[in-house]
Image (tube, rainbow, N blue to C red; front, side, top):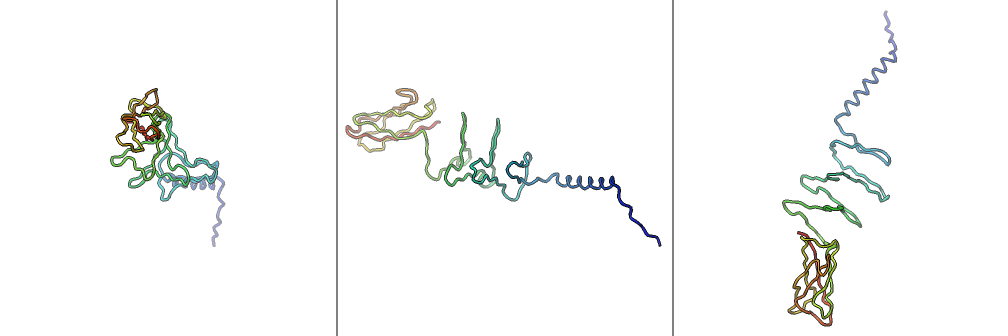
Length: 203
């Protein structure tokens, strides 16, 4: 009877098998994205496009640091897109949900073929306010933050009713640059200050 005895593999043969298995693993991984999973000090996979069936979350805990920042030297820093719902959703429990800032351009731009901007709630503008026309006077001067340019439009209205009295004009950059003189048609009261609301927009 003949007995077959297995011959032990050489180190070269084992190394060849190991390299082949490693190459197969790498080849299988090519074409599918690696998960974005990292802790402090670790890197995440960047570049390319990746599909996911669940959300990717960056959580800084309670450190107060920025969770995610997008930067571009000459283009868009962050893009949010949705085919049928919200492209970008910003939420804050006690502060600003979405904040946009620009040194010399537009801080936040809304563009739509339908409704470009919808505000549910109060709206506050730094280039608005109220002023008091002193008793016996028929005008008041206000200083507008940011100054006034050629395409600035000033709206003003009386906040106290006086029969036969109304706002006659809101003259911008008068009596000096950056100021608006709000004129009434006549003196509204000789004893009480008259409140006037004003609002500046650009066209």
